Length: 334
Ligand SMILES: Cc1cc2nc3c(=O)[nH]c(=O)nc-3n(C[C@H](O)[C@H](O)[C@H](O)COP(=O)(O)O)c2cc1C
Image (cartoon, rainbow, N blue to C red; front, top):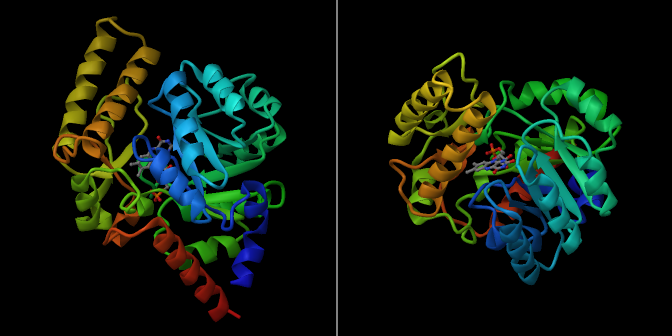
């Protein structure tokens, strides 16, 4: 156990957790119950705020604080129209860690978060962007490969880790995400210089997760190859790919893209509005599956590690087995 704690030290120092294992924010799933359970079990929970307005975030942070005995963070999406109001809500509550997802942080956002005393964690999609973020003063980076669930980039976790860790791991703590289902993989990334990891898919079926039983059942049945990336159908309408389990909703997304492309053609919307329309579609489709349990027509966002999810277990049991597998792998290597 010592070796894993040593390799995670910079991550745990930054997060104030026992293990540098973040549960990545998942819209609708990462709310008060899962977030507090992750942090209370020694990991680090992050509230997903992508689909919330400032009042909703205010209430969610207050409710999470009431349940959590340890630190937790808040994930804000850079293109949220009320980003600065959301930052103010985090500051009001003294949230210690803000994770900025969804593209380069807009001007003034890093400064606003840091002024509140919070640490800023950003996603680095490339080495060049990672260097730029480090120069702008971010406290830590997440590198997330295309194996992950939800919105994804084009590069695999293993390649991003090789490109980014050797250059930037000395500068700031880096958390590796995407496709991690077992502790052996955690051990490998720690040995490559990561200070910790971020998992999403593996925690969806936690007992404490409020995801609908149908959503959890779909995860427990699925294999890695069923978690597929969405396809862009119109070259004029760039959409960020989303990895999800294949269902009728996958086809519905094709129809939605055609509809939005037509709105773009007819001048009803501009490109920014068209892309926002697509993001609203995903938020609604995910809610339908996670909250309402419509696993046919809703979106079953899931990473390829879904094949390693086979039962409902408590957060504490999941973290314990990840840590035990990682520790055993490190021990076996001497
Ligand atoms: C159902 C689901 C919803 C997600 N929603 C978000 C989100 O709202 N914001 C975000 O930054 N990442 C989101 N993610 C990505 C996770 O935070 C995390 O980085 C990812 O799941 C890690 O890869 P893994 O799924 O292979 O463990 C989501 C992932 C899943 C599976």
